[in-house]
Image 1: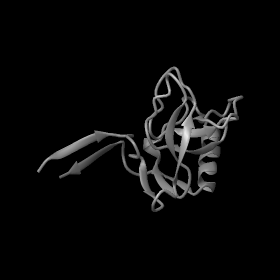
Image 2: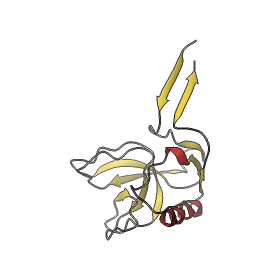
Image 3: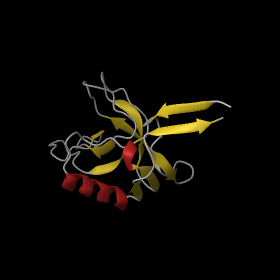
Image 4: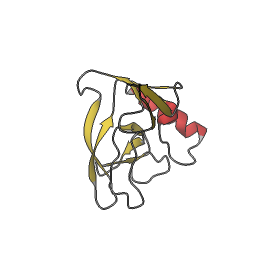
Length: 134
């Protein structure tokens, strides 16, 4: 018997459950981020230009409201890049989500409420380390 330990979030690792098929997912374009790749589990906002970027309640680009959670890591360091967004009918682990650095309690509560309207429930369960036995 082998035990595997993995660090989350990895692609879709934060998802507890979601709707069948691709009902909970949409293909998106992630806005250029020259500083770093955008990790799976990042709470995303929709910019005025139709691309997606990490939620930023203080942004002047439109991504001030939570519209979903990035399912896969995206390398958008050189240019806009494709990604997959969890945007409805799902349960996710709060511990594995990536929120903006320094987000206030009030702004996080607003984002959690916006995701709940989409049918995304954030659960305070689990841990950021998963153990599987094969």
